Image (tube, rainbow, N blue to C red; front, side, top):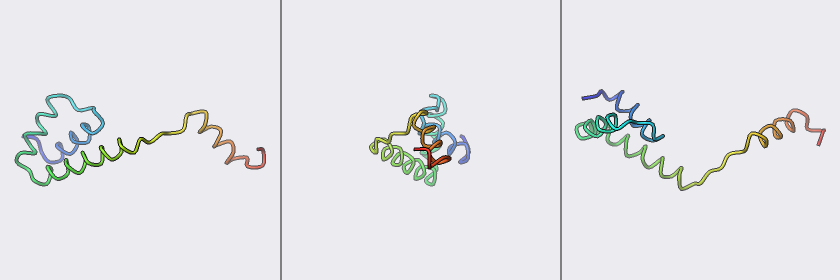
Length: 77
């Protein structure tokens, strides 16, 4: 069985869809026996769901560069 530290790493990888099948299986087995990691995993899953529902958008590289230029040279606009 994996350690709690390893289970935390796998749980975080799972959140970003980077965990392999074997890692997910190891995590599930660990969660059956460890209440603390089970709670951590639940909270991590809820956080992931909230972020997905928020439908966040980031600035494009062009927009970031434009904002950077504006902040460095505020009188040029």
